[in-house]
Image (cartoon, rainbow, N blue to C red; front, side, top):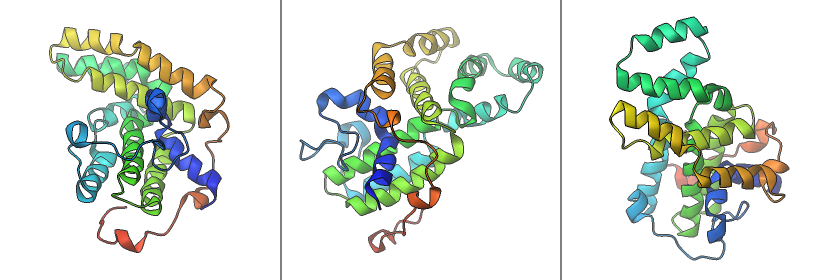
Length: 237
């Protein structure tokens, strides 16, 4: 695969690079941290092997944190404002808080909602899998091709994709709050964290960001590759 297309695929985890750039993360290195030899994922992800990496990636790409809000984001883009208000009014109070969050953010991330929060992190895990020598670069690229297929289906630009990540991160940072009032406060306050502002600044103002020079509308045929023989045991596409 040509290098520019590889860089496009690695740009799927660019928000995670922006979050960790002060620790040596790279936008283009296949192993994410080119100056390191490994990264311990046991405590943060419960991943310690090739098999547990595959289990996590194949599960989280389609059934991660975005699942809880995927239908509301889709629905917001289908209903008229009056129908949306009627729908929200018939939900439980705890659900209404989340629906208000969806309504406040749906224009920024599109109908894909916060799926990029999961897609970006799975791209990150695949690249760390290369760093830890659990998978090869070619195996990582194949997983990235599958992630790219989903990203291009749900989003229309890097801006939408990055917004979905940041909104998803806000949702995740608020996930432990159960009381509706506290949940609403957390959703409003977490989105303005300095770290979210820093990610946005790196992605859209710094000259080395891939979002400054890589177009979203790449030829989809160039973002495909045959499944490596070494991944035949992975029943997932």
